[in-house]
Structures are given as C-alpha cells and as structure tokens.
Length: 404
Figure 1 (cartoon, one colour):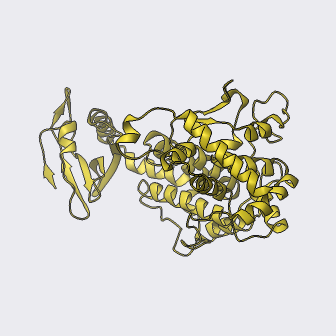
Figure 2 (cartoon, one colour; figure 1 turned 90 degrees about the horizontal axis):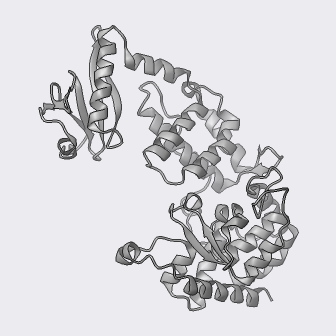
Figure 3 (cartoon, rainbow, N blue to C red; figure 1 turned 45 degrees about the horizontal axis):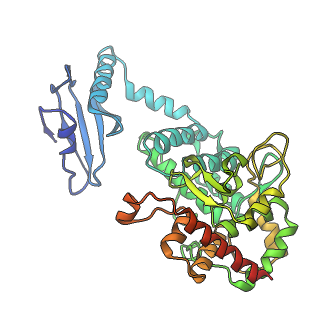
C-alpha cells in the first residue's frame, strides 16, 4: 500500500501491476477538478493489470472495502465524485456495502444475467456477441433456473439444466426443442463467465460450477470438421424434406455466412445490384459486410413466401427470425446418420471448397466476413465485390457439380 498525492488519468495509467495478488494505491486528499478525494479512496491494481476504484471505510470495528467501478470504464473524475457521495452517506451512519450485499442477496439468477449482459457485455464491452449471449440466456437458462435466488443456486440445479439442454429436453414457446451437447457446453461457458463476474461483486456468493460439467471434450469441440463431397451428396437432397431448416442449411453452404446472419436476413438488406448488406449489429465483427448473392441463393430467397407483413426471408410463426435449429437437427441426424456435424461446419466446408476452386485465401476470408490481419486489414477498405462474387459463383458451381 502507498499514497500518491497526484490524481489524474495519467497517474492511474502509470500504476504498475504487482507480480502477484493486488496492490492498493491511496489518493486521500488529492484534488481533481476541484474535488478532493475522500479518506480511503484508492485504486486497486491486480497482477493481470486490471484497475478498479475502491473506498475503504469502517462500520464499528469492522473495515469495509467497496468497489466503485473499473478503470477506464469509470473515469477518475466520476469515481471521485461518487466516492465523495458515498463518504457523505457513511458519515450519516449508512453502510453502502452492506446495502449492496443485502440487495445482492435478493437478486435472482435472471436479474444477475441481465446485469451481466448490460454492464459487462454491452457497457464495458468485455465480451463479444452480447445479443447472442442474451438470446441464449433467454431461451435456455432463464426458463429453467431464472427465478432462483442467486445465492440459493446449487450445483445440482446447474447440472440438471445442462443435462436438459444436452439431451434436447428444453422446449421453446412454439414447442420447438433446443439443445445438443455442443450447445450445452456453450451455455456452460457463458453462464460460468456471468457467475464469475458476479462473484467479484458479491463477497458471499460462491460459483456453483466445478470441473467435469462439460458434455464434450476439447477434442470433440475442435473446429475442424469439413464435410466430404460424398457427405454433401447425401445431405443435399435430404434437406428438401426439412422445410425452413433445410432451406437455410443450403443457403449456409452456398453463401459461407453464419447461421444467425442467414436466419435474420431481411429483404430490405438486398440491394437492386443483388448485394446483401449485412448491418454491423448482426455481424460478429460489428462491421458491415457485403455479400454478392449468386443466382442459386437468389432462387432460394425468391422461393420463400412472405409471412404477413414481415420483411424476414426466413421467419418463424411468431414473426421472429427462424431459430428452431436444435430439435430439427436432431431429427435430421436420425433420418440421415453421418459422423457428427454442425451447421457451422457448412461454413467451414464452403471455405474449403473455395480454396479447392482456386479462390485466393484473402478473398475467401473476405467472403466469410473475417477480419483481415495486419496492415492490409487496417488500411485496405476496398469492398472486393467483383472478386467476392466470382468466388461465390465458383463455390455454387462446385456444389452443383458435387450434388449432380
């Protein structure tokens, strides 16, 4: 512990992390933009470089340490202002940390997950894919354990939830089934992250997740599956029997895009030039992505009937993007038994076919919407529409030869 009279953003940035554990630097009495930091105000720096504003105070003989917020999400000015307000409450005999803990005790699992998505994923932007995480919690976690008090959550309840997801026992609002082994592990990863985040804010909460809860091994989860030509020949005609699921699967292989990007396709996103402009909000990289549509993909889109006034190409009966992939994939696998494959494998397969057809690696990566590494990715903002169209036409032609 040490005291530093100077307090500003540069001083906080210059604080070096300890080799292990954490170090607290106090700024009591330091003045920032006319506001004096109260006694007990400081910055805690951890070994991994994370910094957070804290306020130490006493309630009777007991010392309390309240975390105000992380830097740089919280500026030094905002942290000092809030610390002064807290100190005024403490001087009136209040216990801000005790009140926070009492509120935390009354929170449900669903309320904690909402805070995690809004504060950690969206506000602090520490985890990509906030919308996907929120949807996963809404469909698979909250209906099962959302009403349980966060401190009442038990390991057995988490394990039962994961079993139900893994073995397809979770029903959606329209009776659709969600789940699968890989999905269960994805839920486990998101949920574990949320609970560990909450454990930093609640001294009395213990994360009820232990090793061994995963349903698949790291080898089984490895992203390396590519469908062979023989497997494509088997799958392609069978997809015709599985409605919207089958249609989306064909579009995935022909376009190389992600499942939710295709499922959320709106007619308004397609220009008169036949280019599909995916908005940043629906892209993993949070950047717009242009996909020239081949005649084969346009034929799939044109064949879809409209649901009421919905602009979605692949709507559910509720008017939302089609999402009943889990249960239909289970039925498809029963009807067409092959070594385990996922819809994401179709994207990887499309990438492999483009390479086989002589498409330049950087163009194939641009087709998939991947970020281009290095200087080229920073300075080269050319859309490469002609090159991407040529690559996708080569992909469609190759698939046509394979299936016929």
